Length: 355
Ligand code: COI
Image (cartoon, rainbow, N blue to C red; front, side):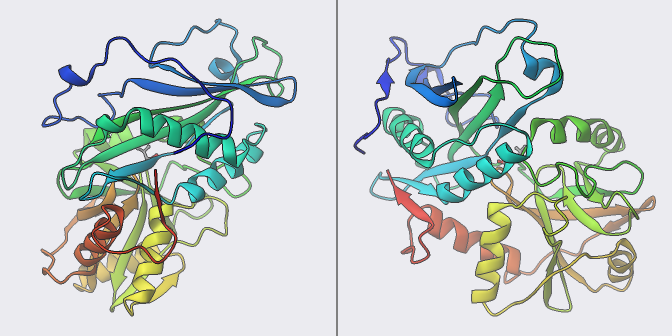
């Protein structure tokens, strides 16, 4: 892909590709050779460059370390059967990054810097993109404050960076989740919809308590009543009851507007499913589990893709979900999404960009 912007490229002299075991990839551990960097100073994004992936040097007074002005995105690139690079819905990630930026008082990043930085980086590190089914290149764009100043105010300088990792499954087997009715992830008027680092930090302790009890993740409920199911720690969640696909709406501003969530809802409608964007009550889920009416429960996310849920704990009661038939919606939609992402079927929705 041709670059219109001035991006200075410095290539690594020691590629880590030969020592990377593509058959044993742990999510987020193997990082590709290069990273894209842009700096925000004097009111503009400048100094666009690609450098060998390397540690950063920060002063202890760096304001991100204290006040947490940091946002990120998660997206993926795939290889089609002819070896071309396919990017999935990158435009949606770019828009969401800027929505998070506005909420966190971070200057928005122009679309062309995001897209050209990303495509130049992918082109350079194309050999890092796995070409096996089920594998992809996870892309982590992020922005953080770089002022060295301890007064509480928005930073005047920032860094935008992108690095990438070859990955397989985030969850290698169906997950168990626990409905959380004490701690809260997000409250109305807060930052729940933003992909802000602090949202994840605040969710770790309650999730760790559940993990100590043997659950993989929490199902967060609303902060006011703890009766409405919102999302899980690493993904949005969906349920099928009475042949209807139910997922929490994003209008309260407490839920991440997942791009996989949106893609699954669009595909479900095309596949003729009834879709309800509404809050599923904990009591409704409990009743559906007790009466055998919960047909499917699964998470949706970039990293998690479609994560089947096998066990749900509500008010200290474990419910094991019945094994899903081969024709289950979550299997069908995962296959459809993969067919689009890996270029096995034509994309007529404008979701794929070839790099
Ligand atoms: C993603 O799915 O890309 C995420 O950001 C979730 C996670 C790994 C924190």
